[in-house]
Figure 1 (cartoon, rainbow, N blue to C red):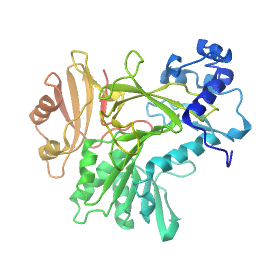
Figure 2: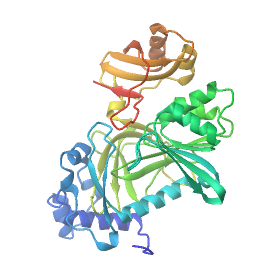
Figure 3: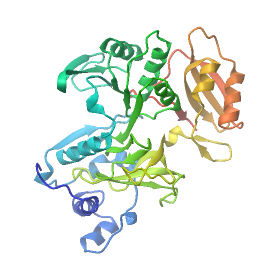
Figure 4: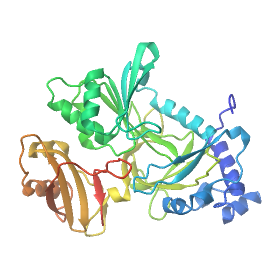
Length: 402
C-alpha cells in the first residue's frame, strides 16, 4: 500500500464497482452486477440507491467476502448511534489513508498548522473516561489539550486557561462556549473554530463573526463514508471530498437536482473494499450553490441541511428548513433554544433564557415564527434548564416528531 500511485476517481470507481459486483453479498446478485461481470458497460446512475435503513437492517451483508492484501488491515468501527442504533462498519487501512489525504487537501488554506495552542473536544474516546483531560506536544513547541466532555463550562474554562487560538469541537458546544465568552469580561483569544458532527447554526456563525480575526471551518462526514465535504477558506461553501468518493444530490425520483434545489446526499466511497457502499443515501439533505466560481473546485455546496427529521413539514405538505435569526432571539431574551415540530400545525420552542431574564412571552416567539418560517405553525414556548441531546451526545437544533 505504501508508495502506491493514487488512482483517479474514474479508475477508482471502476475498480470499486468490479469489486462489489464480485465480493459483496448484498450487491453481487443485483442485475447491474451480473451485467458488469459479463463485461457490459455501466453508468453509476443505473445502480439502485442504497438506503441507510437497508444497511442498518443487515450490515453484515455489506461486508466483503474478500479484501485484497494491498488494501491493508481491516478494522471494525461503529457509527455514533445518534438515533440510539449504532451500526457496525468495516474499513480498510487504504480507505483511512485516502480519507486522511482528503482531510489534509480540503483543510489547506485554513492555517491549522499555524496554531501552537489548540483544544480538541470529544464526546467519548476509547479507554478514556468522561471528563479526562490529556495534554500532548505539537511541533514547534506547541500544545494540544484533548478534553473528553461536552460540558460547555469545562470547555470554556480550558480554552480560557490554555489561551488556545484553535478549538476543534461540536457546533452545539462551541455555541454555548462563545455565549459565555461574549458575557465574560475578557473574550477568548480564538482565531479558528473547527467543527464537525452536527449542523452549524446561523447563531454560531454570528458568534464567531463577533470575534475579531476569528473564522469558522466546518467539516461534514459520517463514520460509514469518512469525510464528505468541507467548508472552503476562499468561498466558504462546502467542496466535496471527490478524490475519495463520488458525491450526488438527488430528488424524490432519485435523479440529480438542479443547483439551488434541495436534494438528498448520496455518496459512493471509492476505497473501502471491506464494506462497499454504492450510491449510499446518507439520510442528509443539502443544496448546491448556483454559479460558484471558486478556484479550488468547480462544485460547491451552499448548505448542509441535515436529516429529514431536521426538516419541518408545513400543513400543505411542503418541507422547509427551520431557521430563526439569532439576533432577534437574543434581543427577546433567549440564550439557547431547540425547536420540536409535534404536529403539522404545532411547534414547541424549548429555550434557556439569558441570565436575569424571566419567562419570555410566547407572543414574541410566535411573531418570529410568523415572519421567518410560517404563520401556519403555532408556537408553544417551554422554558427548560437544559436542551436534550441524542444517545450519542449529538445535539439537534431542530427535530421533527411528525
